[in-house]
Every structure is written in structure tokens, then in C-alpha cells.
Image (cartoon, rainbow, N blue to C red; front, side, top):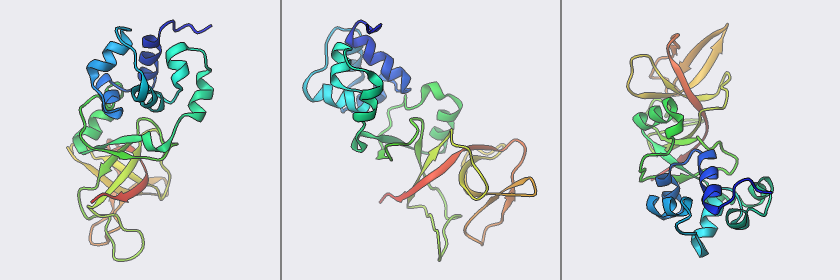
Length: 215
């Protein structure tokens, strides 16, 4: 027997499990926070395209949302199409806020969203590269035109690309992590910039797992 007795309860539980605010969920399904609130309070019920979009974003099925009759784990596996797997595009300030207060993740009214791989963590976000320190004439080159996908909960190892908060710096830096003889360094791909040792109070925000050009 489903312990969540109403459709509204099931919607709210799934939204909270995925760390989405009502506003963020509404944004993802092209609806409003007020509509989400009405559904969760059982004052109204989603139907038609709203129900289908809601089920896709909440990674479950319309049947489970409305009746509670289908196993949610099975629904998550079979109802997670990549075209609804959007993540917000953050600047430095927004990325720091999402990391320092994870329960508020995606709670702001972000105007920019970008498709992400279906297996990406739900607190992942896109970061817009803000300088040319990772731009090179040959090999891997990530310029200011790129978005990089940051996964805060993914461990970083030697050679990984990372987003880092330096002590007393209000902006984030995107570099390659180099670990040598037990010490960590931040290496730019652009050789005109120096490699810096990481300080004790520097913080790795997340590992960068993908980059793309966003014109």
C-alpha cells in the first residue's frame, strides 16, 4: 500500500527528493509555482501534457503520481528521457550559493537552462567560462564561449578539470588539478598563465565532466 495517500503528497515528496523548489519545477515544465502549489495541496490535479511533463521531470510515471499504483523505482528507470534533463547555467555567485546552501539548489528563477546527460547528478550545473586561462592553440581548449558541466559530489583526481573557490576570492576559477608529491596545484592550459599551488582554505566546488560551446 502506498503510504503517500494523495497525488499532491507524491508530487511534493518527489520534488523535495530531487531538491527542486516549486518555482524551479514550474520552470522545467513550463508552468508556474502557483500551479505546483495547487497540485501539491490537492486543490487541483495535473492532466494531459502537464501530467506527462511532470512525470518526466520527477523521473516517475503519470500512473504513480495520480494513483500511487506503480513502483517508483521501476518508473525512474523507464521514464527519464534526456530531453527533460535540464540543468541551470550559473555564474560564480550562483554557483557558490548552490554549493553553500544545497537545499536551495535551483530555487532561484534562472532564465538559462541547458541540456545535460541523463546520468548526471541532480545538483550538477553548467558554469559559463569567464576567461581565457584554459584556451590553447593545440589540443584541449576551453574558451570563454564554453559552458562546463560541474558535478559537486564527484571526487576529483590528478589530471581532472575542476571549479575552485580560492580563499578571499569572490569569483571561481576553472583549472586542471595536478597532484604531485602529495601537493595540489591548479594548472591553466594557457601557458601564458602560471600554475598556482592550492592553499589550505581553497575549496574545490566540483569536478568538470563535460564542456560545450554555447553561442
